[in-house]
Image 1 (cartoon, rainbow, N blue to C red):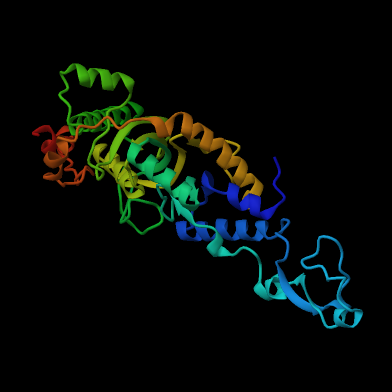
Image 2 (tube, one colour):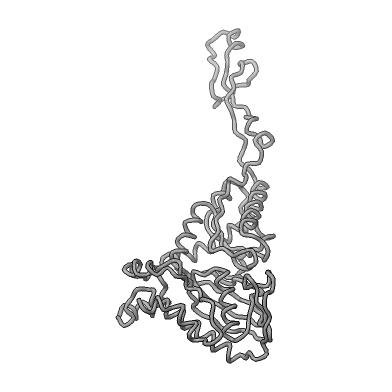
Amino acid sequence: MVVTYAPTAHKLLQGVFAVYKPSGVAISSLLREVQGRLVQDINTLEQRPQKQMILFKPASETHLTKGSLLDCDTSEPSNDKLHHMVPTYVPDWFDHPLVQGPRYNNDSFHISAGHTLDVHACGLQVLGLQEQGEEILQKMKKLNLPRRYQVKGQFGLASLTFGGESRIVEKSTWDHITEEKITRVLTVLQGKHRNACMEASGLDLSSQQAYRLASKGFLRPYVPTDSVIIDMKLTSLKLPEFILDITCIRESCIFIRKIIHQIGLELRSNAICTQLQRQQDAVFTIHDELTLLGKNVNVNNVIDSINHTNNILRKSVLKRKRYFAKTSVKMLQQNKSDILFPEPSKNSTSETVNKAFDHLASS
């Protein structure tokens, strides 16, 4: 369906859609670009008619017809008709676009962002339009839906920000690293995160309720500050470069980069993240044809994307329940330490990983 009438299009531009954010672009710049493209495109559509105003004119200057605002009384003398004032509709030139400017501007669209990517990351970014889109983003945030990333890294280097955009502060050897060693470290980190997540759910793991809820899906922590890795796997290894597939919830870009740094240290080396790309956020995927590039953002493409995603969200995501125990909130709020791994010692791999979850294991 192609919308050609601007007021109709403005009413339909309410909901969530996904765009691709390139690396090196801040989220604020992305929002301004999307907003500007929508404003520019909707002003090219058919606009509402110009407003009319009532102006009183002498009857001699008007041609009264049936159905006009006020018909002249034919019983009056013809001389009085010349002095009779008749209300008539005339264009209101104050409402003309050349006087008022374009019908739509940046204030006509309120755009909010979902889980944001930082400047150096790229990939899928979910956006919400108007109040309805912002409400959907808030509901998705409460559901703690998983996000999947493709992370490219390089062994043998260490930087201040755990990425390749900052200064390299250390170099180390990497020829002793094998695929088996990487898989072993990933398994340990993934297992510790899953155990910590189950502990943070506040459920008795030996109860029937925990089994029933775990069979429906992954048990998520209640405290919103915890970042948990659901799955990690090695997809490519061409030393010193490697590619990981990481699925996690409540994460941040710096959290994922620090995980790469942690993996390098556990392998008796160093590692930096050279590229971080988000490939999936809940039901949104980077390979979906309705995930828009910046150059493809226009009114009709956004409306099609909103209609498609809103139908999916209403049927599945927004009807899901939160399987959390509220009794665990007070207990977990007492332990406010971050789930990010501390700086590991190069003496023991398992000892380093265990220290990060002592506060959850003891609860």
